[in-house]
Image (cartoon, rainbow, N blue to C red; front, side):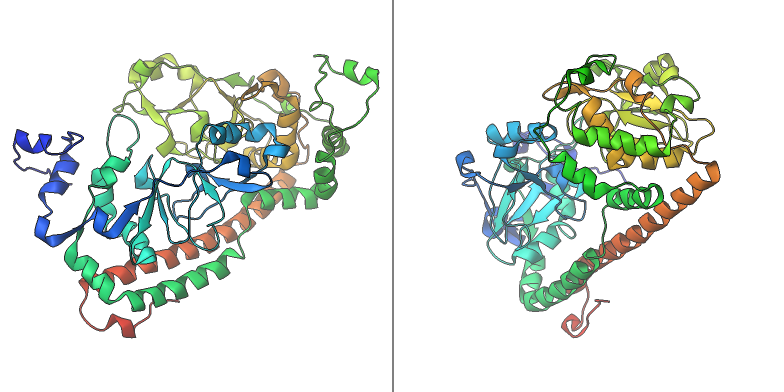
Length: 486
């Protein structure tokens, strides 16, 4: 990557209302001539009147945070209901009560304020216009060519968008005051406008193909639950029915059947007893019977220990919340900190389990990269197995049965809930021969790989939209006579 060198004067800094002086921003502004661009206001409206009356949310509604959006702009909302509040969703309700909720309309565009480089941008269509969204999105309303401008922001104007983001020591961020500084090459916009009928037809055909592919998509946990239910006779339907029961009777003796004298309703739910009975039917082993060393918590950290030039990642709950380690959600630490915490490093086949926080507690990740240098945090526990297939354990930990064991055994109130190594080591774990474990792992992997192929085809289809837009702008000829859908 070449070094950008250009001259500017101090007066130009004061002409920008936020007094920005970062290189990408100034370079972007210097390279756009006034007479050759459309301003942001000529193409978009920044939507402000999008508040929601909380009292109107009487029944089920769907809510979308940035984490519920994929890099391709697909939305995976959570279903909420203020009259049926579940503890695991309490964070959502608290944010919404504070006003972190907006309404949208068809044709709008939402752009994530945090990490805009991940392309978590949403186009509002008939499938998602009834959802509510976090105010952590910048809410745009195009004045024309809604869908074309959306895909253009993801492709030909993406660099412009990123140039406006603020690149500090933390994650890149984008503010509403920044985005109104966007400028769009007039020649490019005019070409898109001239070909908009052709572009809309092509986009419509590609999106129809994507909708067909999405019908074949299964969530990973549904696949994992299906394989384990088939292999070990788990009755998932009865389990789901028992989870709905909120009123039940117990003998007083039941409260003395655990060493902590637990008296919470959650701990004694019928669904919990059902899960334990189902697991005890197929195994009499516990996790502690297969670990190579005691389960341990990670290392605590202070802000001074972070170092962008460090070699070791700090693996927090946030970096494993999607069931795998994601380096983009992890910070680097100093070499000195890493040296002091070598007993809290990770190795290939380690399983990391989040031990705190509603919405994150119980989430697991397996370390598959033997070259990964990482130190796990004090809100994560490390589990190392012997004479047991770590991938089989990882998939088992992702089943609804194991996750429910976390749910009924965690301690604390509100968002301050915890599970501890002394509890986890006592959980039942399926005891079958290693060859059977591998056969089941292969089944899960085969089905997950099929899903990955479908998702890859969906991504390829989306890339074709960007290719069509670029062809219209940068290539000569009659593109309207050529379709690249297929």
